[in-house]
Image (tube, rainbow, N blue to C red; front, side):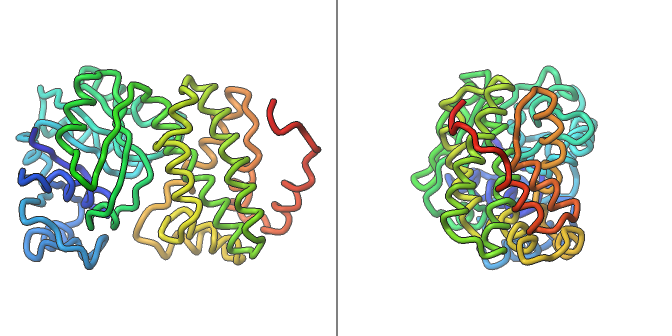
Amino acid sequence: MRIGVIGGGAWGTALAQVAARDGSPARLWARESAVVDAINQTHENTPFLPGVLLSPLIAATGDLAAMAECDALMLVVPAQHLRAVLDAVLAAMPGRDVPLVLCAKGIEAGTGKLIAEVARDLAPAAPLAVLSGPTFAREVALGHPTAVTIASADAVLAKRLAQRLAMPMFRPYVSDDVVGAEIGGAVKNVLAIACGVVDGAGLGQNARAALIARGFAELTRFGLARGARAETLTGLSGLGDLVLTCSSIASRNYSLGVALGQGRAATDILAERTSVAEGASTAPVLAQAARGVGVAMPVVDAVCALLAGEPVRDVIEGLLARPVAAEFG
């Protein structure tokens, strides 16, 4: 299976590295010419993943038509840009329904659709899979031990992808719960911002642990309302990813929250960054989607308030002033 990766950021580059580890060529499309040149000339993605030596079997290109030779495409672009990029991909390779592996984590603004629903709109005949789980790009690219979920309604496709990508230090597990895998990845980004705020504001480890637990309760309620299975939400793509991104400054969403907790404005923080913190875009979409299915998500609502510029102290006091309630129910 010849793997192509659409998206030349840190995560796309790390997945190309995984795809090339067994000695197979991997092709990577990047929008930025600097990324294409750096990978092809120095085997390093200096703009987005500096200091990581990449396999010489990774060939970068800025031409989408060059991806037509691939047997499967991993789509690793920010959730809010997926529709436009996938539309361009399909136009560059008409008549081909290659498997699409969706690696973005988020919910589309405007439509409230999960990434697989967006892909299905544009490519109704293409086999679909979702890759999600607790993954920092640099660690994956360096070959540190990692486990992920590959979810697809097509069990044969999920198994083929898992076998193709599996390496001693990269272990895929297969699932047929696409909705659960997607929701875990989308919601945890928003909760990671909240946990970063706790640390940035100096509220302590007790508060962060409580926030992770209550945030996971919100993730579970929303996931079940959208048709996810509970076991998926407690797995790698749900609880596993949540724990990782809510506890490390290496998480873009967590680091955004830390800066918010220190009193900085979201607009200023995001303007300084070249990488995308998906949770900032997902939070208001998620809050609206939760209201649409009658699910209370107060932590998510608090993140939305912080991103909109409300003072940290006021938002925290509002959360703590909520009426006492049963933990479960």
